Length: 72
Image 1 (cartoon, rainbow, N blue to C red):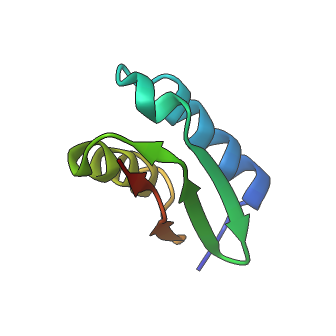
Image 2: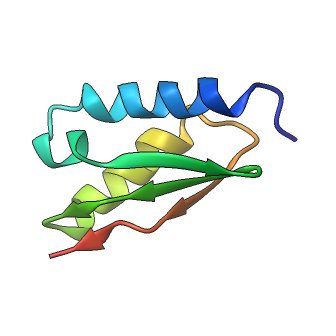
């Protein structure tokens, strides 16, 4: 169950990615659709894709996270 406004969760998720020491994660974007957070963008490795997902999942309790990041 989601207990906070989507805009707050998306903003917090974007801040987490923007402050990442991995530059590629700073270019990703997060969008909300219902109770689902979508992560979009492109990274160079599956490791970075997983890092982005876990960064978002750790601060989005109650939200489903869908990782639609492309890997080059």
